[in-house]
Length: 368
Image 1 (spheres, rainbow, N blue to C red):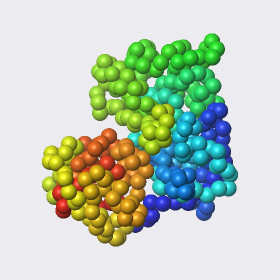
Image 2: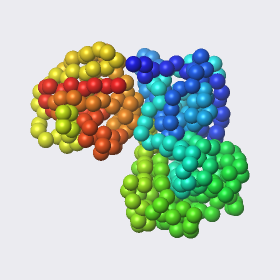
Image 3: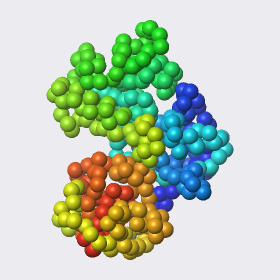
């Protein structure tokens, strides 16, 4: 089994806005790194107290077609430990430890498809949508894309130049609707002023006859408030739930510091059904090794493993990114949060160790 960890070299930095930078990476041997449009890269940085390693997941803004390069676009978070450390210190030539790309919020191009795709994002939620957008325009020539992108003003638009160029290059196939809550100047570039909310989305989508609501595919990425507004608008338009994919764009640990942005399988419970009052034994199979350890009632499975210096894969620690996903082979696990798992994954016995608590003492989990 290949290691989930990689060492990448910073080969270029692009200043996107006053507080957002794209970091371009390559492997030292310039071999491509397997990824899909919409996935994320987890950076591991020695910026905690005493040089403790901290992890943050950042969506790829590059596409597989740009191999061997990978790129992430990082926006500075006021008070954010990792984003500030990274943007203050990153240099071309520097090597960083990362986890290989992960994530289920993906849009795979189908060269013969003729789809109507609507991307809805706000702020730095544009990053995975940018990867999807470039991949579809390049590799799916019969499809049309509409991007609805909310920002404070014209100067805060990440990828502004690239988006303008793509709109010209793919005229007739790609259209952008900018929504500015506090525009700096009157401009023909945008028709919408105010928050990107349900009303604005309905106004835009009802005018877009080449994107018939029930037939289009929707990919949403942004803060929880936007996701709820978009979800509400799409329900009013009669869009089937199966045509909507979403990713809550939360850098879990940074946003805690600053508000910015079955048969044969173990039983996965999304709601605890008995009181856990004592430590439970957990067995984990990972990279050919077996680990057994105790998990106390107040700990997650991941926390207990890390306390034992067991180096399991993880990233967001909030149940969103799935970097810590494993399969529960026996026993019973309660999840505090299941946003990152599909119904199918839940039914197959998958759990997330970062939000998982053993409810029985015979829990066996296979990772990888």
